[in-house]
Length: 171
Image (cartoon, rainbow, N blue to C red):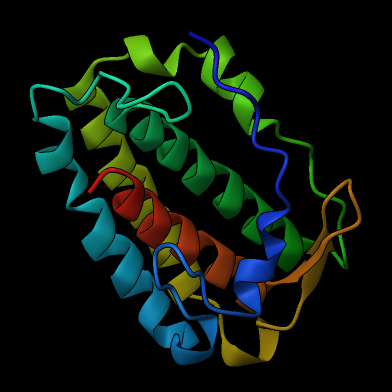
């Protein structure tokens, strides 16, 4: 079963609270983000050890396994974008189609234990990278191909929301 691609522009999550998962960017200091990312990523091994981890709950939602594989790849993408912003002035970000990645990499067919380990490791490295950014560099910017502009700080918020929201998705 193919899930219809998510055409929503989720960049609003860096400006206002998410009515679904409750993430509130205004209440999230930058220095708390690495810890939030680490603690939420450490919850995924338990989620992926469930008997139903690879089963989609309905025709419109990914399985917990697919969400976890997506989140692992989001961590990779966010860390690459962070590194790009720190190395260049206002770099364009390489496009990444999350829905194509899910199909091309067969997220639902991956080994849950491997995905759990990779998610924890990759998210930990990304969290460490965000933690290491000095205050003076957190306003550096970059932009997606669709024109959405991020600073280091708003990218960190976006990344943190992904972690909170996808745990909410598989609750």
